[in-house]
Image (cartoon, rainbow, N blue to C red):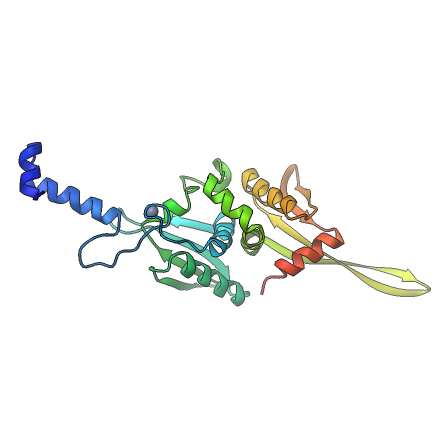
Length: 243
Ligand SMILES: [Zn+2]
């Protein structure tokens, strides 16, 4: 129908109908003259699930979704330390794979860079977005997200450990046959204030057969530790130290 006919039918000004159409098209990225950017959730567009599982891990660990104004698309930002350029590249590649129609940018700060992508569909892909800090609100995965994490558990863990985790090496010396020998004990730590995010991490570790324990900092169990030799070997094969 023409806008004028709709306006007459609903008894509203014709400009109102035009405005409604504009808002609706903007929501679906279908404004005339602009390229359509189909969304995996709204439009059933294909989703690179392996890249998504990794990006979800990064987002839950150290990502933020910010909208500066109502007239701009929100952005997803992951802060990456300059010390790990490989990680920054991996983050960029995952963002580009999940948002193939949007450009990914890097913004340098002191000692770190923010890797960033703008999309009107960030909230569709990261429904965990909400007001306040992540550890002050409930974080749970939607069914479709859990299905992807179940399919790519190591990619999800890699994202979590790349953002809020690390591989540390503790060492000690021991006398063996009169000779002092150095022994190293590598372990992986995941540190996050959110009980929900730590549970997502530990549940997924259990799922892939990695033994973990909780380490308390003061009275708060903020750390998940992986220290058993076989489990560290599994983590080394799939995650490894940050680089
Ligand atoms: Zn969408």
